[in-house]
Length: 261
Length: 272
Image: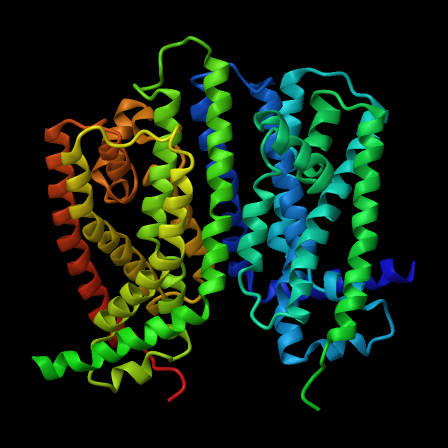
């Protein structure tokens, strides 16, 4: 409860900051749209040559694009912009300010800032997915919607754990600049239909480095099919990773050398 | 003349030493750069499976497509101007440029030399290992069937890299006029990636679009050299590509010069 209240304050604070730079908001919003546009160009081109790709029909694939965009944006606007600062905080010792506050330090470091330009984009992705979903003419099943919501959050959490762990490497390695580029190239694996990968890659991406769980699972539950064991596997994976991230954070803090005092 | 060139020898040496410090960073960058290639190859494999026995798209067989993206990746890595635009914009923004303006060097020229030295180290640590690594995949790669194509490509490598560099340099100079640029740069980056043929061979585009894209310089930094190696171009088209390269180098150099002079007049030299 306390954390929800705290988060509301963060949100209000970011809204006020953002109002000061309205242009910035608009440019951020539109530059993120470019992400979506590039996927849509590819989509349009490929589906002018084929009717289905790895078993994904036209609108199923469009749904996947919309959802992957929404998950990406949710992660970027709520968590990524904080993770991105972490390296700098560790290097300069400014992390001290976060550690001295009487709340969970991982929560504070990961959720302090919210990028509202990206936040608005979540609804853009959802809207695109809703359009595709409506074209597919599937019946609404409350159970599936509930599973979808859980898996959506689960996908965001897995993205977060990967990025957060990469940034935590900064506790041991001084220059960790490439982590961000690495993250985006790796999560590109999540945005594709899992069926395109060969057997080995698919197994690896489902059971070892769970990129398939992030986007494919929530999309599957709505427009294709996802079994209960798969659902539980996905959620369990997310929770275990989240727990591991807290261990890594602890471990990192032990190696943290603080400011030059 | 010799005296004027002497500072640049130091620049080369410094740039190389700096690049050597980040060799592991570079290595990782090159290695991770294989992930997008993997995804692209997998996606196109699925496209070809979905098409079954339908005629190949714009004359690209499945193997052609795989080789195409491998060539594109190598060319992009070779001519990469990753972060050059940011670096220039950053120098302009925070007044970093001052320290070059008071020295007897020409900043555009200095920055170019620096870039070349940096790329040389990159080629040594990333590109050659990658090429050797790809040798293991030789069953999937279609090597050039006509040796003359390979010769043309080798001659074109530097001009291609120069076009890529000039584009980034011009984009970086936008910082003279605009404050918030990183988003804009991202848009340019995406546009360049698609228009250079990094996402799909440009011949797959509908005809009118293909013609328009063909008039822009971007295809020269990806689609043109890759399809040259695959033997997809007639000699008249190759000649056209070579001539366009020369014309674009001249045009972009003139644009860069123009922007640089105009920009300096607006430059407020923050930090003085």
